[in-house]
Every structure is written in C-alpha cells, then in structure tokens.
Amino acid sequence: MGSSANRLRRKWQDYSVSNASIAEQSFYKTFSKLFENTEYKIISQPKEFSEIYVNFPLSQKDLDEIYVPDIEIKKHGVYPDYAITNTETNKTIYIEVKRQDGWVEGKSRSAGRGNAHERSCKFFTPGLQKILKKAGNLGEDVLPFWTVFQGDITRDPCRVREITCWYDNLDAHFFFWRDTSDTEQLVEHFIEKIKPLLD
Image (cartoon, rainbow, N blue to C red; front, side, top):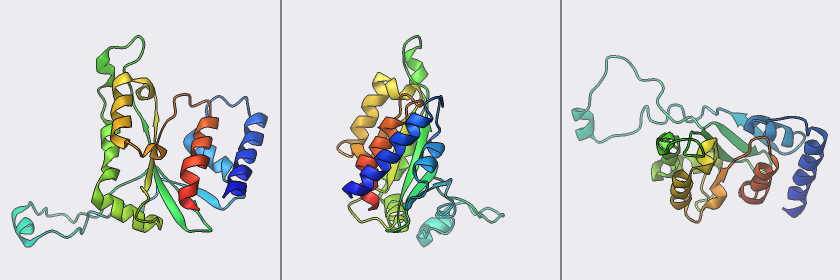
C-alpha cells in the first residue's frame, strides 16, 4: 500500500509543479490526470443506479393503496456524480460533489439556507448503503461514498458544524474543498483516506 500511495503522491507533485498556472481544476480533471497509467479510473455520472427504485418490492397493502400512473416508470434512481474504481481489486467508491452557498463575510445568515448538504445524506440510509456496497465490491464495514463540498458552505460556521456532526468519526468520507485552485489537499485526502478502501 505504501509504495502505491507514494507513487500517486509523486505523480501528482510532478504534475502540480509543471501545471502551476492552471487556476482551477475540476474534481474530474484532477483525478483523470492523477489516474493516468495507473490501476485507478474515474467515471463521470455512473448510471448503474438509475433504476434501483423502479421495481423495488412493496407490500401488497402498499401496492393497493398507492397511486398507479398510466405511464410506465422507466427511470427512478440515484445518480452519484462520480465513481472511482481500482481495476485490480474491482472495488469502487461513489462520489458526490456538492457546491452550495453559505454564510460568510459580507453575506447574511440566510445565505446558508440551501439543502444540498442535507440531500447528500441519502447515502447514509441502510438500503442505499447495501446497494452501493454490493455494487462497489466493498466490505460490510466500509462506507461506500465520499462527499466533497465546495463553495461558501465549506466556510459557513453553521453548515460546517452540521456536516462534521453528521459524519461523526467518519471524517474520511467527507472533504471541505475550500480552495478549488489548490488540488494538493484534495489529492492527499484521497491517497490517505479513500485509496486504502479500494486496495
């Protein structure tokens, strides 16, 4: 594990030095570059969960009492922003990148009223965890997702406390990407905390 992590770290340091003029890297561009010629790959908008709710079994009582539309429901599911796979171990973790406004200097407290961070908590539910763990070939003790927060929410004194409380001791599974022009801390978080889950 150590040599593999060091190889990714050296690769990224070399890239960062030679591309210092790039002002802002997107999450996808950052990891696409990092994973070139490695066993890792990043997939944008994986679709394997787009129908997980379509035929989810319900009790006959519920089936008898819910609305049954005249049209067939073909898509109803979950759409992570990205997936990162180790092609050697066939393990995958799913990523949500959430950009949200927040209460920071020069803004009112109401600037932090968005709920993208709350919607990301659907991945904590037992049913989705079971589905994502199975698809990701992850063990029972591994949380199958990583949430990366961007924007003013990453400095909002209320929202940062909420998120930190929600994740509790699972700090490997969220990251406040406060300065998106600086990819070093993001990559370091992946190498130190997410990569070992995929090995």
